[in-house]
Image (tube, rainbow, N blue to C red; front, top):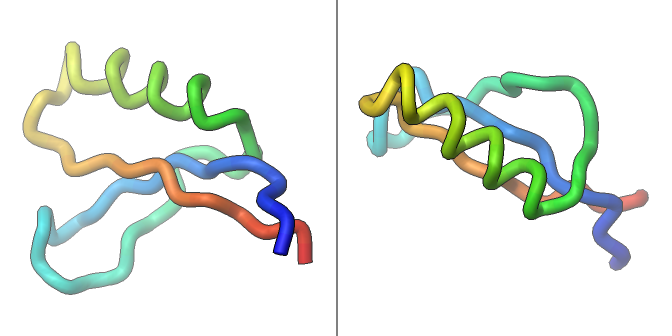
Length: 57
């Protein structure tokens, strides 16, 4: 299983169990995804954001 990159997701329920929604449709390197989280947290510090890997399959 090869990782193609990462997508940025936001959780509408915070840390509760619910489906996260994609913020961007692009697959990006992990560092870029983490930079987006940092930038968004500057304006929206309470948003629960995460970078999750995407497989090439």
